[in-house]
Structure formats: structure tokens, C-alpha cells
Length: 154
Image (cartoon, rainbow, N blue to C red; front, side, top):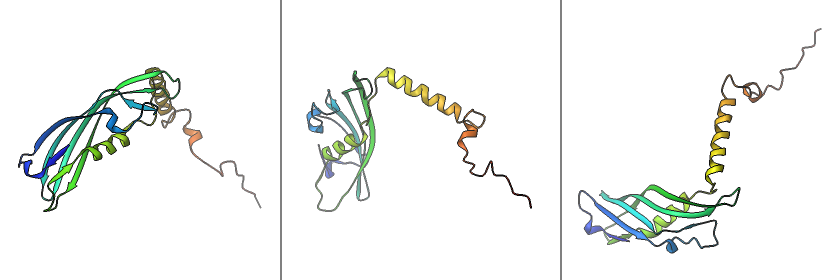
């Protein structure tokens, strides 16, 4: 999507468009692929010599759980801020490649199914209780190399 600098007013402009899921570059054999086009909502403002784009992207992806290999489909949404330096010779800014890079960087590394996510949250909850100052692991956490050292009396 091209944003022409001359079209950006003082109050900024609101841009909405779609990026086809194939344009993101995740092939069907990848660990994750989008099954719907990526919806892009951007508020574009010109501040001094910088074009700021507050961007929200939404889509739906399909993957396999990394533990159970169960098929998982989830809605996905992410927000990020893009900035572009504007020079006198700049006529327009192309957003698609920068948005594509931000999308790839913000995708989950591991996808878990709902049951595995529940187990993960439960184990994190138990771990936080065990690590509390009065929890059973509190004495095990402190490293005390000289705790059992006996002084030699002369």
C-alpha cells in the first residue's frame, strides 16, 4: 500500500486494506500459515520529518500444536508502530514490506493447543507459588556454598 505524503493532512489519515495471505511468504508446508487475508488498519500522521504509522493487523492462522500435533486454528492480532524518515524528494511510502516483516517477527514461535496452554498456565501458577518467600523451594533457591563449613578450633 502506497501512502502519498501530499495526502497526509494535519489530523493524519486512516488507512484500511488487506494483504493476501500468500504475500506474507509462509508456504503451506511451514509450521504456521494464514488462512485469511491480513487486515491492516493504520493511523498515519506526519510529525516534522517523520511519517508515523500506528498499525493494527488481524488475521487467522492454522498450525499444529508443537507437543501433541493437533491442528490449531486461532485468531491473531498485533499492534506496532512504524516510522519513516521523510526527505524533500520523498513522494510516497510503501508499507507492505515493513508490515510483512513485523508480522513475521511477531508470530508465535511455539503454537500450543488449548489443553496444553491450560497445562502450561497451571504449571506456571504452581511454580510461582513454590518460588514465593515462604514456599517449599525458597530454601533450595539460595546458593550457600559454605553453609556446612565447620571452623577449626586452635
